[in-house]
Image (cartoon, rainbow, N blue to C red):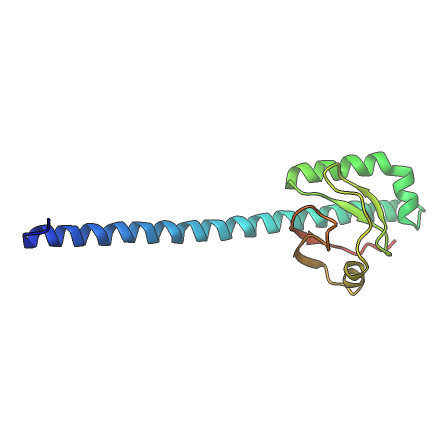
Length: 151
């Protein structure tokens, strides 16, 4: 099949070019995937910041000192705000008490209390809980952000 030197060089050159294109494709895929994850991570973090600021505003503008009272009084407004943020970031959002009790969340968020170990980490001021299913609370592993809001 490769009798002449020309066909051997041609086949070797074609193979090198083919392998080079495959490697280039793999490198581009890895770079774009990494950039996509960083963008998603930033969007989720900014959404968590915005939700925390919104809830902090309720504390500042009302005489309510307890998050349960704010949720009871302004539940519809808070829920619409959470749903809006959820759509923008394509994320699930939930509000929990300091003991890990579920208060309110978006329609795509499973209602359930946080596991004690997660609550302990959050109370220890670990704002990012990494990629986790929160010990079975979420159906799939997700990027999770937690913020302490004190009223």
